[in-house]
Image (cartoon, rainbow over all chains, first blue to last red; front, side):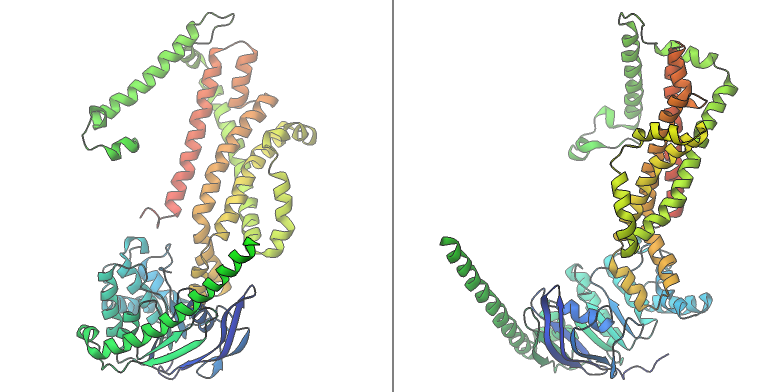
Length: 273
Length: 265
C-alpha cells in the first residue's frame, strides 16, 4: 500500500491538439497534495482531456505534467478515474469488478474478496456482490465504481463528470456520499463538472478554464468550513463564490459568442459577394 | 409467447385474442388457414397438380425412417463441420483484423473483394476444384458461414468502448488479462450474432450443394423427389430442412444464453 496524501498534480504549460485542433494551450495549474480540486469550464473546453492526460491515457504535445514530481508515463492504479457513464465491466459481477485491480496485483482471490465485501458493505452495497452492473441502479453503479477504485488506495482520484446523467435526488445523495468518503482523507482529487454548485459544494479550490483551447483562467478558493453542510448552499459566502465563478464563465462564453458572431458575419458577407 | 404488437401497447381494452386462450386459438387458426390455402393450391387444375398436405403426410409416413434419419444427420454433419471450421478460422481472423491496423490493412481488402460474390456463385468453381463431393459441400458450408463470423467479430472488437480498456489498464491489467477478461467478453455478444447468421447461411449452402451433388442429405432428398416425380416428397424434404435449420439456430441461441449470462441476468 502506498502512503497517501503526498501526491500533487502539476500542469506546467501543457498543450494538446487533436488533429490540428488545439484543445489545451499552455495550461498551467497545480492540484496540491490531498486537496479536492474541481475543474469547471465551458462544455467541450478540454476538461476531459486534462483527466485523460493525468490518468496517462494520452500524452501532452508540449509542457510538463507531473504527479508527485514524476512525469506521467502511462495509466496506473495510483491514479484512478471514475468515468462519465459507468465503466463497470458488464460481464463481471459487482464483486469481480471490485477485486479486478487487486487480482491484477497478485492478491489471492479469497483475500481480495474479503476486502471487497467490507468495502461494499461500507458503500451500501452489501447483498449486491453477485449482481451484474445492469442489475444495479445508477447511484449503486457509481458507488460500486468508486469502490472498485478506492480498494486500490489510489493517491489521486479523477472524476470525469462522474455524476452526469443521474437524477437530481441521486446526484445530491452521491455528493453527500463523496464528502463522507473524502473529507478527512488525504487523497488528491480532481473533479471535472459543469455544475458550479457541485464544484463549490465539494471542492477546496475551483479551477476555472477558458473555452477551447483551454487555458487556466482563475483559481477560486472555496473557504467554506468542513464538513460541508447542505445549508451552506444558501449562505452569502457560497453566493459570492458562485457569482464570481459564474461571471468568469459568462465572460468566457460571451467572448466565444462574439467571436462566432464575427465569423458568421464574415461568412455571410463573403457569400453575399 | 407471441409478441404483443404495437396495437397491444396502445390499447388498454383486452380483446378476446389478447387472452392466453385466445392467442392459442389464433395460432391454431393460422396453421389451419395455411393448410387450407395449400390444399386449395393442390385443387387448381394443372398438368401436374401440386401435392396436397395429406398426400405429403402420407409420403412422409411411407419413407424408410432409417434412410430419412441418415439424410438428416448427414446434412446436419455437413453444416456443423463447415460451420465449426468457419468459426475456428473466422473468429481469430476477425479479432486480428479488428485489433491490429497492420492486419486490417493486409487482410481486410481481400475479405472485402470476396464478400460481394454470393456464396452460391462459387458452386461451379467448387465442383471444378474439389475432386470429391464431400469436399465441395464442406467448402460451401464453410464459405457461407465464414463471412458473417468474420464481419461480426470485427464489429465486436471495434465497438468495445475505449473506457473499458482504459479502466482495465489503470487497474493494472496485463495484456493477457486485457485480452481474456476484457476484450473477449466484450465481443462475445457480437460474435454470437455472427454465429447465428452464419448457421442460417450454412444451411442455405448445404441445400444448394446437395441439390447439385445429389449424394445424400435433405437437399438431395428434395431434389431427387422432384426428379423421380415423387412430388409429395418435395414437401417432406422442405419441412425437414426447415425443422433442422430452426433446431440449429435454437442451439446457437441456447449456447449464447449459457455463455453470455450478464445480458439476460
